[in-house]
Amino acid sequence: MSATSALFAIVTVILNASAQLLLRQAAQSGAVPTSPMTLVRNSWFLLGITAYGVSVLTWLFVLRRVPLAVAAPFVALVYVLVPLASRALFDDQVSGRMWAGMLLVVLGVTLVGGGAPEKSASRAENTLPR
Image: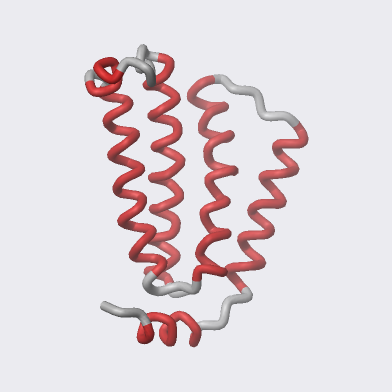
């Protein structure tokens, strides 16, 4: 994975994790899914939806350059960022099993990302319709 693709993958993960945290804050500050007006009036909700939208665009950038089999596991880093940020922001508890699971996720993403052949990304990009 090139440095640019890795950067965009990291930005995607951060945006996706941020979106989840923003939506949690929205839920805690009065956004109610069955009451649409509480959603459109809640700035946390609007920021969360925007973060998800931008993360889709950055993800498309990654998918044009990296094989899906390599890129997709990278998104699993959200399972590390969200519990850590949720602990800091919302005082959520992180159990020993969760710490172990987060370590395994990081290890797995590292193994998958490091084992990707560089040539397949450019070949895949050339075969896709523009």
